[in-house]
Image (tube, rainbow, N blue to C red; front, top):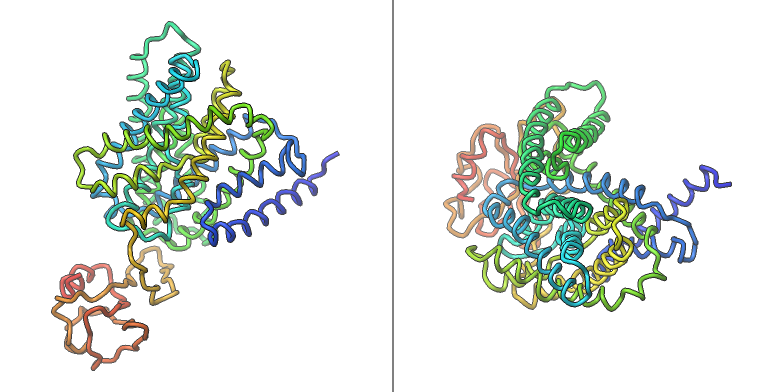
Length: 483
């Protein structure tokens, strides 16, 4: 008989091993999700621990819950000023790009492996989206030039809804052969329309509610945001909309305002997103049976290579056809087509729907994800450097501190900037700058030294300045410094 103590001990052990495995991933360049999946496989029925786990519905439920918190965290860390210049390109990649990938893989699977057209496109739809968890984990902290990071994060955070729609739509077409493919068009409009509408409505309502709730206990604010995430997905889905899109939009809307305890909430959801990633990948690793993978290894490898070499580059080329991205940047975007947990979660949909080829699809998708993460994920930085899109080392932040105002309204900003060469403040004393009232230069980083500023301290080009000011003063400070 398995006691709750056994389950808790096993869960703690897997979590601890996963956490320390992430350190190995950071040092070796191997994506952490690959190690999490491997741990799940080692603990599963065919692994060392021999834990029996064959519950597709449970794996899907864990995956969906984990994914919505990962998407919310990604949206919460997204700055509108960063994604606004690439909004059109990101949405095009998330819709047109996903559709082209699904159709291309469908053609390949039908032509070379004998699937029907509906089955082939279903397989393509399942693996059509790049994975938010994988991309966020790999790109955060990297130093890519230009607007590559906001483009890739926007794409990976917003393309799951399209993949979910295509997967569900193709399952309906397989189950109802008399249903015309054009019947999916109104379904698309309804799902995306309700998803976007509910995301905006709940986001605007709840961010105002959070700032005016005046809760007696600070610890309840993270609980309130958790409830918001669950409400966004659950209510939107019940109304027939796309819950993933709603959750991501709520996260983005939350990121655009000064929420009470915003820094602590962001840190909380970042930690929660990591917990969700570990739980999701462990559960999906448990669900797969490694002994079944060799039988489909040939097909899986062929499809994975087709996606990496042909389908993804073609979809990116078409989606970014009229953009200002250089060919080097487009090649890099093509390479960062990481498949991860989202396709594996979607592969459980055919299993639960009783599709004839469902078991084959699940194993194929799992193998394709492993190949994608192992090949693409481990070579992202070398490819970026080879294409010349990897930026220079950024200086460390001047301040390890975070200011959090507890009065319900954040009135001060602690900002860090570099004094431009042509700035009119170069060579001037701090006392002569005529800074707005309530503005204070806290610290100056000059080359490898830290300078404690005084009234007579001269500012030099290239100085990294840590400055505290009020929200209302930000425009005048930026105009003065020309930043």
